[in-house]
Length: 100
Image (cartoon, rainbow, N blue to C red; front, side):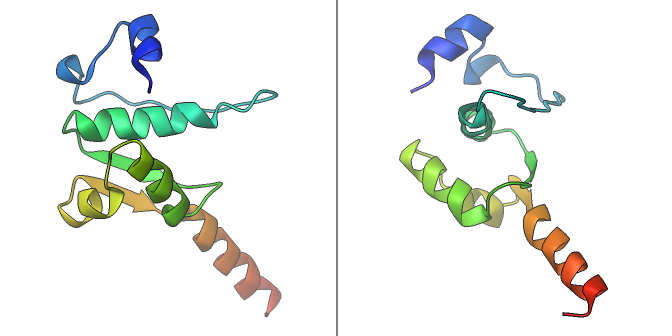
């Protein structure tokens, strides 16, 4: 699905750098497809990934990754993926502080 993007970036899962850090942020245009691209790209390359979910839940990312041929549940179980559910954690903190 992202062959063209990999070509533009001049990269492939066969030649990734294990110590790379990528931070994605979008402003006016929706760039969420890049999140799914990099998540599936690095997992397919066999890299360990720490993903902080600020917008969507793990199940959302898992469903999209499944369509891209990546099993996030399996990656998490074998220690290749650490998924931090910041979306849930921030809601829990806010509810706790307001006394809900």
